[in-house]
Amino acid sequence: MNIHLNELIFEESFRKVALKNLSFRDIDQEFLVLHSADSHGSEERNDLYYCYMKPYEGLFFRLTGISDEEDGALKVDEDRTGIEDIPYEEMAGGIVSKIVENGDLLSNRLIVDLSDEYYDGDEWKDLLATRRLVWLDEVRKAGNPDRIIVPFCGRPLELKLIRCENDAVLAEDTEGTRYLYGRNGDMMKYCQGE
Image: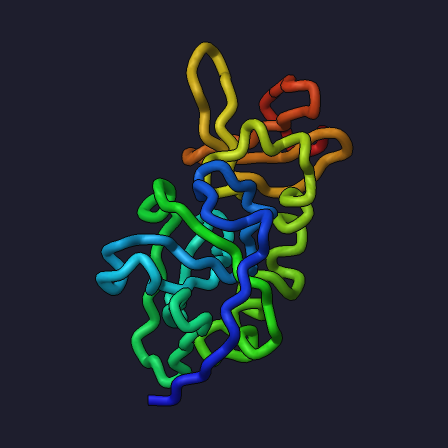
């Protein structure tokens, strides 16, 4: 066991807030404490997670250690061999606080490769560009900003985002049908060559 101790400092504007009320922009690639009396039998000791996104699968929380408000410490176990990733749906009802990053935490072996895997390189370039479109936020699926839920023919239609197209996005349903969804809410089927 290789325990690293870090100072526990909360970001004041993100202290004990409902996870469901936060934008993915607030928590993507950030460290969060999930407040729960169940964590370690004490309100003062809670689990520490690193939040990240898997393309099209949504937000996940990787357990990296525990926080101890009583002694003001973060305890991170560098030797953990079993990776524990929890999907957003299982955490959505939780209360979280964001940790002020001190440099040590990002070098943790459990998360050091995540940026290469999901945030870098050409494979995800078009998808990552859609995450910058703030106008899409009101139709993004909760916990999964790579998917949108929009009304179409009187029913909600879930689409996965593919890329930006001028003032619209190209998106696809589960059957592979492609649509253009515009900034003004207009939607039409996409034909190659349009």
